[in-house]
Every structure is written in structure tokens, then in C-alpha cells.
Picture 1: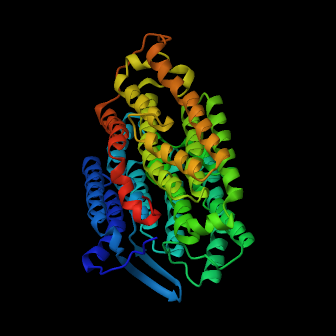
Picture 2 (picture 1 turned 45 degrees about the vertical axis):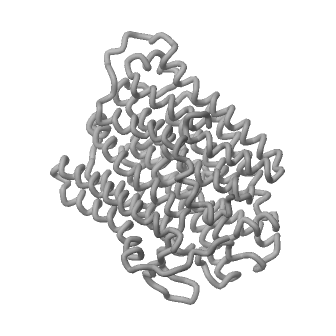
Picture 3 (picture 1 turned 180 degrees about the horizontal axis):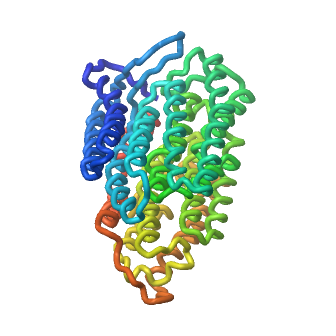
Length: 492
């Protein structure tokens, strides 16, 4: 595997903390402009666009691997940013989806008459800052700090409504994520430092030859369960509990930042801490392979049985995240590339589904699947976007999910992994069962009553249409996502 070396210009290195600072600037601007809603929302969008431009400007420098050291206090322990393609991919997802979600959220909060708009956007920006921190982390210690900040920043968003149900959901959210990260992830990082003498991410991994198969198996389990944001069963309860939050928060949790931080961290640990070769040779990922397979199927079954739309989408996320974790446990370059691509395609597809769910709730007052009959006739843009995202989540052309799922299937086949291959195929069939009936109801069934509403406001339908088009664009532009990963994952 190629090691990112070479000369780094000061401008390239400085751009790393700038990517973290821009959302913090947005947070400050939102608080200063709290009494001027239009200026506040414009400031958030402008900072979002500036962040997207900054992140995309880093792509030509990804192979040179610029680094920016913040602080070193012990040998092998430091706060440091470093650029590499997998982290830049996650940063790009968060940076692009932030301004889109901000525009939608501005319309949603007004239409739903939600309180405390300035507080909402301030914590939203702080969450994006933590996502940038995680994506650009040069080592495990830096990643852990950003991981914990993200939990604390999103907790008030989950509790945004302030009622008993919201407080209860936020309490479950925070307790599960903090317990897993402090009780499992932190010891795993310390153990890694003891074994390898460093926590720096290194292509090919840190732990090859440093421990036997038994130790590596236990350590990998600590990492996967400790990264609770990946929502592997049984540490997944925080995700459905967080569905008490407004729809833009659900989009943030499921697509822009939180769960993507989880699966990104799992992929990062597999590739840069253990190394795919070490995982394969030691068999350290074998137990987690079965846990991921169980999660993928079990969560899909729960989704099929859920009538509440947001709960169905939440368990769909648990199942789809398990695809990415399963891809990491296969310890195969093609499967890992599929998992990385699925991080992107699922983000764009799932944000579309949640934006649609929010538009349906605000415009039609419907939140249950059984209540959606005939709504596609009065909300055609919303449900056309929902159908497009559904096709992508299932993994059918012409949407980006086709290629991410194909690569994971191909990796399982090339690695002679028969059971995971079957699990991946069954999971896609179950996705048909829990998502496609929603669009069928909306377009093909007659409405239960004459609706007194039309399409959602343009400020909401515009963003969800844009993300739906993104699902299609990823079908034709998947190579642009995969090419930068070729050196990291030794793809042909």
C-alpha cells in the first residue's frame, strides 16, 4: 500500500484547520445574528459553501498527505490533522450536504413553527466542525476528541423539542454513545498505543506483527462496538431513540455527520490501524463479521414491521450501516472500496428520504406509512425524490447505490465469503420490502380522503430534489469517488 509522503506546502497544511474553523465561524455568526433570521441563515449557507470549496480544493493534495500538528505531549501521542483520501471523502460528504440541509432546515423550522432557530443552527454548525475534525484526524487521539465533541454537540439537537419524549430520547442517545466510546473505544486506543507505540494512522496498519490473533480479535471487537455511532447491534438503540428530533436533525444524524462518522471510523481503523492484510491473515474480524451480518438482517426485518415512517427509516439506516461494517470485516480491498462508496451513496440517498419525510409531516401532517395512500398525486416532487432515493438504497440502476453494493458483493465473491454474499443479497431484497411499498402507496393507491394541501414549499422541495439528482449523478460519477482510493486500497 502506498504511503503518503512528499513535500507539503504551508497553504495545503493550513487548509486543514481552516476546514474545521469555517463551521465554528458559522456557529459564532449564527449566535451574533440570532435576532436577524435572514442574515443568520445566509451566513450559515455562505460558510457551508466556503467549506465545500475548501474541502474540494484539498483533493489535488490528497496523495501528498499534508499534515498540521496542533500539539504533542508524549511520544506517539499528539493532536494532529492529516489528509488522506478516505478522510477527505467523508469531509466532502459532510461539506456538500451541510448547506443543502441548512436551506431545507430554514424552511422546515418555519413551516413546523419550531422554537429556538438560532440555537439549532449553532449546534448544527458545531456538529459539522466536529465532523471535519474527525475526517481530518491524523491519529486515534485526535479522532476520539472530535468523536466525543460530536456526541455533545448533537445531544441538544436531539432534545430540541424540550418535551419529556425528547429528553428521554436524548438521554438514551447520549448515554449509549458516551458509554461505548469511554468504556470500549478509549481502552482500545490506549491498548493500541501500548502495542504499537503510536496512535498515528498509517497505510498498511500499525498492528501487523505486534500481537497474536486472539489479542487482535478482542481489540477489533472493542473498536467496532466502541464506535457506537456505527450502530451495530446491540449498541444501536440510540439511533431509533433519536428519532424524536426534527427531520433536519434526523438528516444530520443519518446522512451528514453522525452515523457517517461511525462507519468512517470503522473503515479508518480497519485500513489504517489494523491493515486489511493483518485482518485477513489473523482472522481478527471474523466474530464482527457475524455480528454485522445479524445486524443487517435483523434491522431490516424491524424496518419492515414499523409503520412509523421515521422509525422505518431509522432501522433502514442501522441495516445499511451494517453493510459498511461488513465490508470492513471482509478485509478485502474491493469490498472496502464498496464500503467507502456506500458511505457516500447511502448519505445522499438517506438524506433525501429524511428530507422527504419532513416535507410530508409538515405539509400533509402524515407520519405513518399506512397514512401515505395517494399522497404522490398531491406531492409529486417529494415522492419522486423519495422513489429515486429508494432505488439507490436498494442498489438498482441508474443510481449510485448500484455500484457500492456491486463492489461489496464482488469483494465477498472474490474472497470466497459465501455467507456474507448471501447476507448482502438478502439485505437488498429486504430493502425492497421496507422502502418500495411507501412509493407504491403514494402513487398507486387512491387517497383515503380528499387532501387539503399541495406540494411542500420550494425551500424544502428544492433541496430534496437536488439530493435525489445526486443519487443519479453518483451512478455516472462513481469513478470520481473511487479513483482517489485506488492507491490506499490497492485497487486495480
